[in-house]
Image (cartoon, rainbow, N blue to C red; front, side):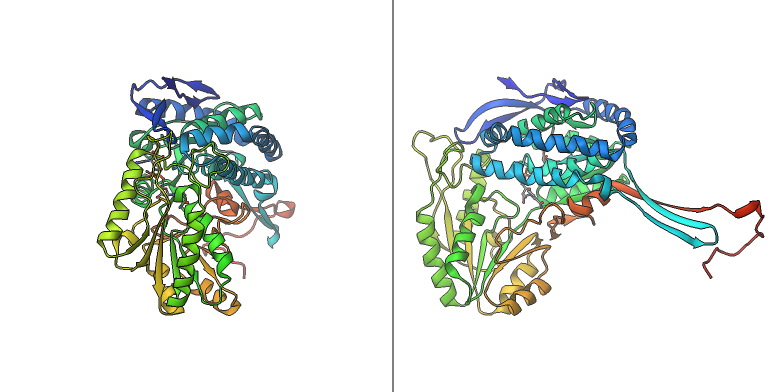
Length: 499
Ligand code: NAD
């Protein structure tokens, strides 16, 4: 059995805990490797190594740190195909989609190439007599990232790009379900010239996460995963005095107004709902059609489009989506489909029991469509995270606006319309962090920041963009006075003011 290694101090390190997690190939359902689960002692050793390495890295000038990012970007482009194939073999998403996963991470690395400019401070000359004020940003030290299975390249790079470029040492605790690409990222960073110990990968479960959260030398933790765990991780890390940002689950709505371009909306929704088998936090698993006529048209067009979908193994170049990540997740999705039926939703297309000839043990779920879904249904309130699309019928714009606003999650939302006034009103009013107007997956570009509201995000600063730079640095403000001629100023017992 292939054994995946940690990546610590610039090299592969065998797990010492004797605890392992199986890594499956979701297309075949077979175990293909096992990943070690780190112990407290392994976490402590990794942190100690990172603490020692970080001092020199923080003292390396930002232009040289940027050069490592430029080279890392080049190496990611060089190895895009092999990285994507490796990613697909453990995750199950099709290879073209894995390339997108890597590309979106690479765009954050491109952003991090600008770190000399991004970390520039501010300066005020003459803030008072002989007084100048300047502010600067300094790295935190050792920081950690805990990432989910669904974007094993992009999300680690959301974090490590700004963290490393800002002068920190970074410890990644990736998902134990698809751990190989994160290790490859470490190898490529070393090849790009990063000093040993600045990017580390520790595989593990709750034990490793808790050890990182409790460790006094880990100064900040970024987490992305499901909401209950995000909230627990946030609370534990914050109680230990760390800077925390924890992104959680999602249930994103696509609002269809009666004046929308229905054919374009259907084309957009198909990819957003079923791409990556719905395993995206910015997937669009709910269509809110305003008016029964809009709903009827959308339903018919969606049925037709779904009929043309091809489900296949992750290396099938013709497939639109592949298997879900695990047998347990497949069973969970199928339970939610049954729940929707039991709650009275209208099951239009049933993806349960889908099998692919030659791959009967793969973790496949076929495309599923519900209509007449209502806000009181648990199958609507929860995140299903599978290829299941739910149509809801709203009587008015106001009702369509209220559903995503009142939902427990507030990650993304999209509105499809030709009416600029309605779109503007919607974007202004909706209680969701990322809004698309005729854009189904409004993941912000790398120089803006990513983050949801409500139970989709705990903490103040979002991922990447300037928020990433702020998260991985702390500001220091220096007020300096160089009096002329050594004249002694009078004693003063009142707070200094600028009067
Ligand atoms: P998950 O919450 O199961 O795991 C996320 C990480 O937490 C993994 O590294 C895992 O090993 C670790 N973990 C698991 N149990 C833990 C525990 N009890 N204590 C501490 N750490 C623990 O999530 P997942 O299934 O890997 O990923 C899917 C979820 O992530 C979905 O809910 C999805 O919406 C969400 N997600 C959110 C975003 C976002 O930016 N908001 C992006 C991608 C995925």
